[in-house]
Length: 372
Image 1 (cartoon, rainbow, N blue to C red):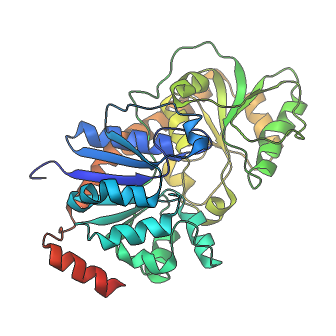
Image 2 (image 1 turned 120 degrees about the vertical axis):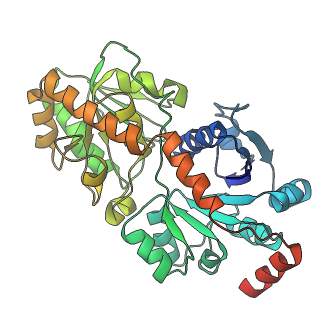
Image 3 (image 1 turned 60 degrees about the horizontal axis):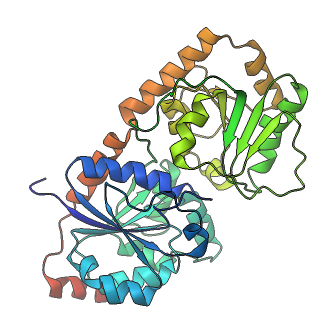
């Protein structure tokens, strides 16, 4: 790269990790981008549910800008977006369809989409739900970064007209996520916001094992779980766990559980950030199975695949410390080698730099009119 890039990102949230996985993904990626000398401005819609739960207000790796409406975004920041070397719009941005059309009208030099919810996005578009992205807008983007690989990339290109889809899996900052040496407190833990489609798997892979193993201790951290859930007495509940406490949380577990959303399970090739975080902290992984997991965490070498309560009970009662350490060490090495923030940031910046910028303003607006 001949000079540092000026990148503007419009994303769901950077300031609050409450009820979403976007914030931790963006934080790790942008720390990596900042470390390589590039400049990032993150523009976030100021909404009350995140305002009440902000755990990062002054990041030292980018400029954070809050805006109150699409009109305010354009009035105050249109020039910034037009001048940027690249504008990246994320999934689930409030009023996303309107935001995308408005940014396209500005004629950005490079326009990218970062879909942290690809299987959910394509399922929504397939049924005509255009909450944050319209089907007609997919071809607008010079690059379509996808949280998912595999068949999702083929569908983006062939079915939805994405010009250049490429995987940009979530990542983890190894300087922040590492084993803290905290004493072990739980035999199995889970970190995730309540989701109806994940709950049956959580019941099968954590709650039922907890009932069978009353002498062991379990924990579930995350908001929005309904009060009618029958938690066994040996399952501790933590309503919200900010990212600053994640490493300590993983370090206190003997195993950590990963449960995959239904759309991502069906799509495959959609690793959760929780897998990378736990592996970075040296905590052995127990995960449901999804297509592609063996490319990230080979079963029995870097993760334990659980399809039933029996599988979880067997791991909790029969795996000794030596076997657990071998699995955790293998998972850590795979994350360090291929999924760290430094690696992912390099992929992100290189991909943006490979797209020739539209430097002439008239050309940029002309191209915009042709797309529409």
